Length: 105
Length: 105
Image (tube, rainbow over all chains, first blue to last red; front, side, top):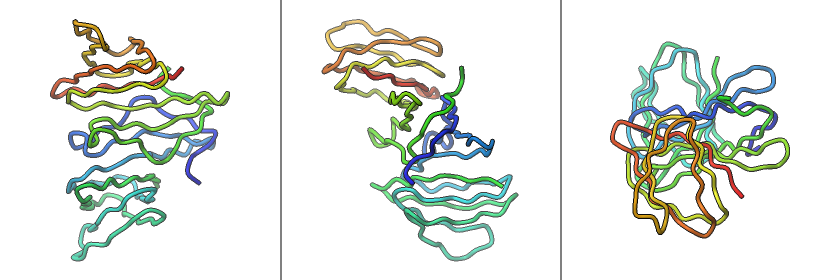
């Protein structure tokens, strides 16, 4: 499914890390909030509040969760889980862009 | 109105100019297509196919339409029109981000 139907979308973007991560907030009919976004070539560290599931919808990234020693590559059609109150490093290669949906809770 | 309700949103972003412009496509209930996006600090030239109305929803930009000699500043709550099959230069200052909705046709 390449799109969400019957949702609300916030017009103003969420801009993080000088624009290396840009997302828009989507609210489903049942009130569930998600973000649809993209991470541009960079190496970033994200902190989580709620647990997150990052669903890849385009491009790829490498991820290292807090406490892990190995990087894992994630791409389109794959999802990875991040615990709440934690962090993860994410790296997107030059020429790529990692498109994602972030699911919370 | 800070959001669109009862719309479809395409999960994958539109990325232009190495990520200096990122948008997501939104389709209203009546089939009308719009994009919600952000332009990061840069000076870019956009070409238009269909005529566009750029509605500012955050931040500001300076714009010079093809054939114009003066720059005009546009901000939140303001809209400017761009003819079809034309172009415009847009400049966003360091530290700012221009959030917009693009209306076509």
